Length: 469
Ligand SMILES: [Zn+2]
Image (cartoon, rainbow, N blue to C red):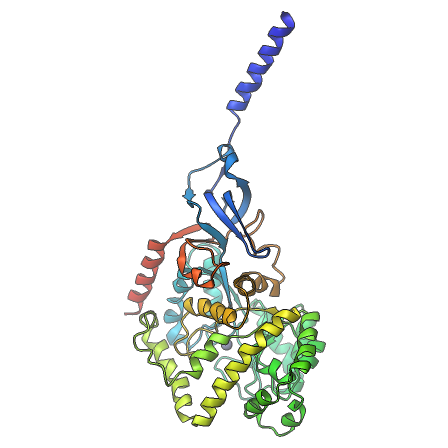
């Protein structure tokens, strides 16, 4: 009897201790989420996500929801949660007078679910670095920014604000100045950079642990550059060059981009396969920028005056669009034809590169001067173009928020909705793994511990438009 009583007593104490068991508290809890696992092309439903500050702390089944609490709850109602998008090639530029107009573009990225951007060089670096710090400390609404700072170019740089590298002695000086402002990687440009300096920058940057990417002087060879340690290449001209057996003889003619049309005509798919395997083996990151190629090829035939996003571009930025329009007008019809032939070729190169295992990165190339390629929307368009080129929606999404972090060796922190990763998340009504067009169903964006509902995103946009006027 006594023993029985003791057991009952023990059970009572045990049960009461269970009932007062303290619930684990989070800054934010998302309930009833369908988590999109892009890497494995899977969706798991009925999930709870616990977030503290900007880190995902817990993924649990809804059946355990009684164990957790928060003052901030998002009821996902079985909608889809996925990592925020990365646009891996954007620009802030146009000189000091356009700093505010560039800054006004930051909310546009968030509106389209882009929580990280890789700035590929411009002439307002101090402002960009200032925004980066303010965003990181939660004092400015915008995506995470990784920046190359000023581009490295030769004696006659193509773009304002570039650092000139004319001889061997300039290389350490240029890299010192980039490191002094804490850039995230090095972007090279081929306005007048020599082949020798191009290789030298790559070597020296590698010693310093800096990643290199960019344009390439057409006298150089991308596979040689890879041997020197090149980490990435922007646009597909330089990969294309390596895929033509005529490339070497064309290089000697000093015709620069005049060789592109012949490179397209002499593209050799067997040679290309070898090139792509080499790029894959050496883990080189290639950013095709297909969509901007499409926009620029049709620049004169397309009426952009009613584009819904044009109103978010400041008057100064709209003015910069004229440079490419004038250039297109000056170019002969033949060169316009060649441009669209080249764009078709680039599109054709994407799937074999993917199949060979090349790390492709989605980048829109949006920003001032790049006419009618609007921040935010242009990354969605780039992903659609990658799908049109033959990638599955899963493969296209990988080029954005899985390969983007990989370029910076940050794959441990980004790329999936899992415990320990950064809580840069988007909530969508529809699953983009099924159809990439479903990216248009983004409802909530979460970054730096802030939840942006659709109305908040729209308000931010409205405000940024008012700032300009
Ligand atoms: Zn660019």
